[in-house]
Image (tube, rainbow, N blue to C red; front, side, top):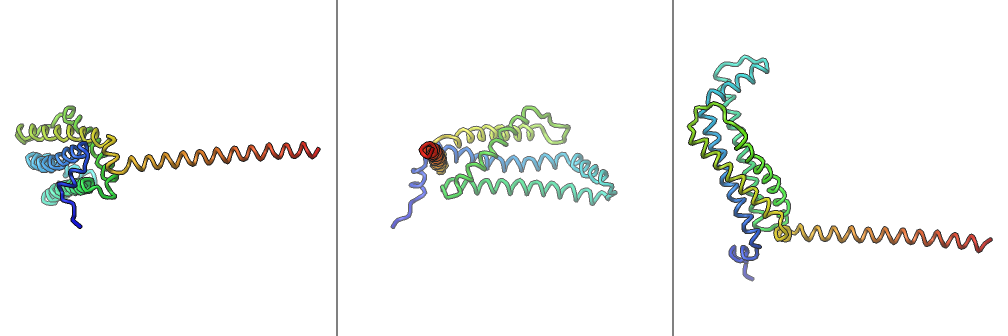
Length: 213
């Protein structure tokens, strides 16, 4: 028995799903670049990073030396970047699950749908937010902003593609919804039959009482 090739597997996917996988893959790649550029922008603005760490320490009532504040500042930067990259790795894994159409494909689609909304909403901040004074070069801000715009546009396209009937049918969610509707309809009919049976019994009891009189 021969195993299906990746080309054969891709051929079974609807065109909508194929486009969906491509735009979400673009989101993954561009988001990695955005996170790395974010680290670069933060390092360019080193004084603001250290100032924020110093303010946090003062509000906590701690008088830390400059070395400790610097360590805390860079530590928080590393931690936030690692967390962001872990989230991106999970999204990449979910994208692979969706591409292979495993049992978790529906979960992967829903997770990506939520994050696509987040990326689309973040797109608004690119036009609304005004960057504070920074030592980073303007071209770096422009590149990062352009990447966020591309991510937002790709995310919006993903929202459109992932809610189409072909995609829901691909992940099995459409069949689940049909099955759920069928079960609800059967439950409604069963309830209606029980109600009719109860009314029939009540009428029969009333007739029996009249006959007894």
